[in-house]
View 1 (cartoon, rainbow, N blue to C red):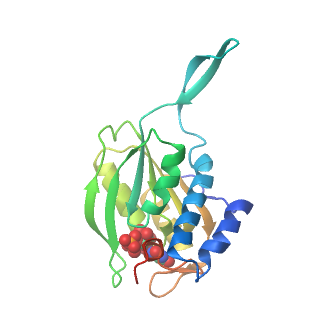
View 2 (view 1 turned 60 degrees about the horizontal axis):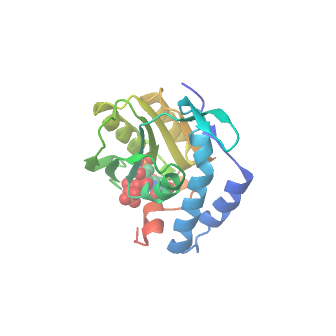
Length: 209
Ligand code: PRP
Ligand code: URA
């Protein structure tokens, strides 16, 4: 198991300050999540496999490399959709899997309601996207489901992680590297991350908790 990679990047943290602010509108919230997603792409992909190729430049032939496909992005609905556009902007060749999970607010366990996945899951590098890693139940469930359908090479990307969620995810899936923009203090009695940024899905889509 590798240690989680917590970015604490100055530019991302500047966006995080705006994102966390309670008066941030859904329009701005979506924009900041998208910008943070784009800033995280290089870190989320730094060790993706590549293959060698040659390209004719105007002057001579360059030996270079391109990404080895297939690449699958998997947002966990709903809030994971907020990260998708930023990832797809920089990785337009990726296919997209969707997993619908709603956390039961009493038991804090994820309840699955949707699964739709491209073929070639077993050959693909799969990047699972969700802004929030709280108890770790949703991320663990999504990754278990993807593995059940054949995924072998997975990584998980979130914006805010709680220590409890990291522990759970890494003990359930020690083979899955985790990347987070920030690691927060912990969870409150309702399973919300502190200080966190509230309910990410509600803030992205302008719905009420
Ligand atoms: C939120 C969030 C994660 C999950 C994290 O989704 O986007 O998927 O909770 O909590 P956990 O780590 O304790 O499982 P939610 O279930 O509220 O659904 P939504 O995205 O539709 O708002
Ligand atoms: N889901 C969220 O959207 N926010 C939290 O703080 C915890 C779970």
